[in-house]
Length: 335
Image 1 (cartoon, rainbow, N blue to C red):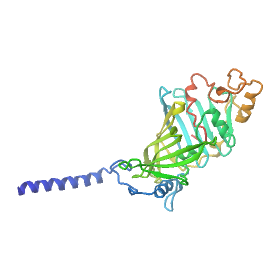
Image 2: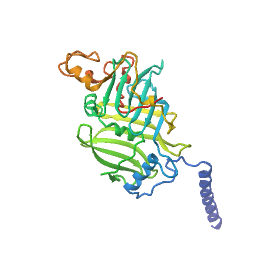
Image 3: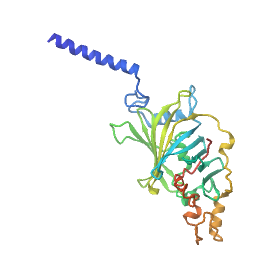
């Protein structure tokens, strides 16, 4: 009996020391289930938001995430037979740019972005680079069916801090580390929508942004494969999946490189100059479509503008049209 007890104690000791040795030799990934929590299980809304915003705003000992870019992005969608290459750059508060290329020839297919004055949309085969001012954004979004404000996208990209004003904390599953930060906000057309930020409260990372109208999901962004940048200590996701259920559209971006807080040249945020594609203001485009039957995208003349009159991707070339619908409308960057 004594020998049995001794053997059990020895095995228990070996198991305990083995786990300790394993953790020292093979430490868990920072955000895995085995990794230690950085927030207490009863963390308050203020504590959680403060922790997330510290990654963006920085602290006395660490810079925050002001900008980032990736020159090696794989963009995939149910409409694309294979992933396509892209480049993306983001800079707070309004600079964004996404450029998508042909996976075979490498020619540019889509250029979408924004700066302090404009949002722009261009796809190969379009007759113009479409510009929309910030003031025209609500009207442009209604007609192009982009259901969210660009500021939400910048929040998804991780460079804009979370505003906790009027936000509530919800723990729907006490056995899960996922909590929800819920906030009622106005949409671009004045309707009230619910903005939800889902957070892994153990590791203090955002795993999803979502927008709901009358409890119906209208847009979501799922973040995954979070990593800590060795040079800065800043946490960023390496995968973002964007969904628009009503439009039956979704696509995923995988970032195979990421450069943190590297300043982009000013031209990265300028409206692009495309050969034989002069820029045109969205308001001017609408006026022309309403007027003499001018149809900038080759659609049949109508008494009032239809989707093809105002959708910058409606008449893209057949071999490039499948790039059209991932309309990340608002913001700009460089490759």
